[in-house]
Amino acid sequence: MNVLLRNNVRVCGDPAGPPMIFAHGFGCDQQMWRFVAPAFEATHRVVLFDHVGAGGSDASAYDTVRHSRLEGYAQDVVEILDALDAGPAVFVGHSVSAMIGVLAARDRPDLFDRLVLVGPSPRYMDDGDYRGGFSQEEIEELLDTMDDNYLGWSAHLAPVIMGRPDRPELGQELTDSFCRSDPHIARRFARTTFLSDNRADLPDVRTPALVVQCREDVIAPPQVGAYVNDRLPVSEMVLLDAVGHCPNLSAPDQLVTAMKSYLAA
Image (tube, rainbow, N blue to C red; front, top):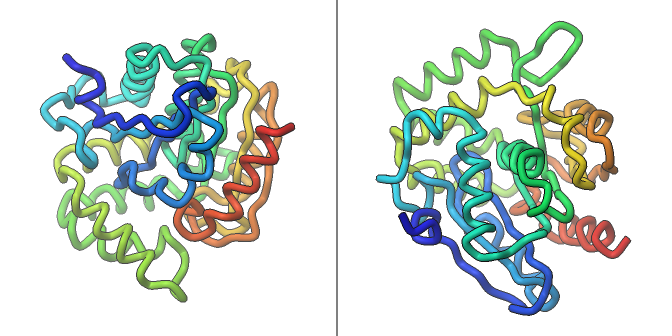
């Protein structure tokens, strides 16, 4: 299989620059980076792609076994970097792709120079003293609602995830993005995402990381970002003065500034 076609890989920027790969979150595609990635094209070899089932990817490549775990998506990322001979790279992962990057860096540290984890969550469900932001009942209700009415779920939840009622066009864009995803794959990816638990994987990652967190985020609250930062061996955290789970759309200038400051250091 052609990996680059499978994941609709697009390479731009400086071909001689250090590689930087952007991984989008659930229900999105590479277009979600259009306000961030261009800021690095003058200095980096920028790699954009779509997870299987999203954007222009080959949905027929979806494997019910491989992609039932985030490790399967991490292997996709590894295969993309290997196919491009593009390591060690800066990996920029949003939402669930933050943990996908953590898993990929754990397994193939030679391919990763630094990680930028935007709104990461190693577990969305509360567990004892750990607060992921959702109870088990809330996660089950979310997944059941998605199974019953994916389009209605998308229209209701996307604006909540975006967290910017003052900019309804952003919520609408996320809704439209959800609706463009293959619904069968999206529902399975949601279960893989919201039922995952990658807390034990964090200490095994030796790649330096930047944790980027919004001050208000209903999907990955600030305490979750702090948890990730505390348990990664080499990391630092920046709190954006932004609201919502998608600063790549709602606060791209702040995100770019944080990334450039981190990479310069």
